[in-house]
Image (cartoon, rainbow, N blue to C red; front, side, top):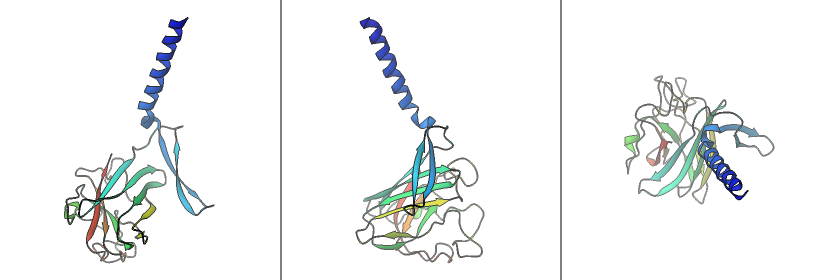
Length: 200
C-alpha cells in the first residue's frame, strides 16, 4: 500500500513539474480596458494556446544604471507595452521603438533610427507619418518614476515585416525632452538618455 502511494506521489509531482515547464506554452495574455478605474489592465488566460511569446526590455541610462523595465504582450488588440521606470529626470520625454537591438552607452546611437518599414516620416501629427516605432510621450513624476501602458497596432512580436524580432532586433529609447509629434526624424526630443533591447 505504501509503495502504491509512493508511485502515485512521484507521478503527481512529475505531472506538476511538467505542467509548470509547459506553462508558457499554454498561456495566453490578453489586454482589456477597465472603464471603472480609467486605466488598462492585463489579464492572463490559460484557456487558449499562445499567439506570441511575450517580450521584455531592461532599460539602462548613459551611466549604465538600471532604470526600469517594459513588458510587451501581443493579442488581438495589438502589442501592449507596459512600462515601469525609475531614476529618470522628471518631466515629459519622447519614447520610441528603434530599428536596431543595441544599446551602447553613452549616447545609444547604436539603436539606429526609429523602427519603420514603409518609409513614412515621424509623428502622429505629420501628414506623412507616423513611424511604426512612434509612441505617445512619457510623463515622469517628480520622484523620477513613471508607470505607463501603451498599445500599438503598428508592430508585432510575431514574424512579418513589422516584427520587433526582425534580423538585428529592436530596442526602446527614451529621450531627454518631449516629442513634438510632427518633426522628422524624432520630434525634436533631444538626446537619448535611456535604452533597452527588446528580448525574450
